[in-house]
Amino acid sequence: MKQTRVANKKLSRLFFACCAVEPCYFSRLMKKILTLILSATMLLSVPAIVNAEPAASPTPAPQADAETGFWITTKGKKRHNSKCRFYKKTEGKPCEATEGVACRVCGG
View 1 (cartoon, rainbow, N blue to C red):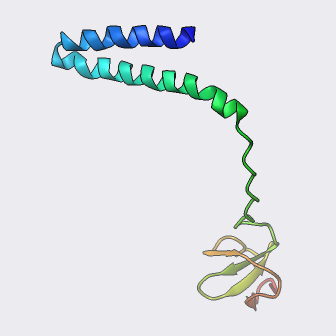
View 2 (view 1 turned 90 degrees about the horizontal axis):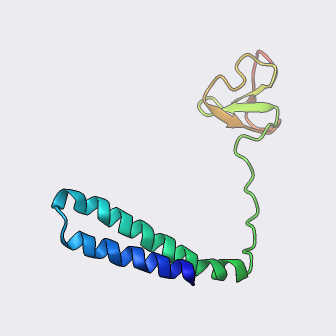
């Protein structure tokens, strides 16, 4: 409660200071006022956050760049294994051993 009283006093002082201030300083004072308002609302909402039930954690999505040991090109649909010179050098994505056409160099 004491913190909110201090914040209210600061807000009222800043508000009255804004009324007799030049326009070039008005935006600075408004930023200070908004900062104090936000900090006051955060102080008031802390107990609600502490008492709130934790949200269920979402299941992690499978990574798009999972290491499968195979790489398939998007244009030619050629499959390369991790020892091939074309592995991850061309535009493509990770794939399984049965996808696409095997590379002639590495055998896919």
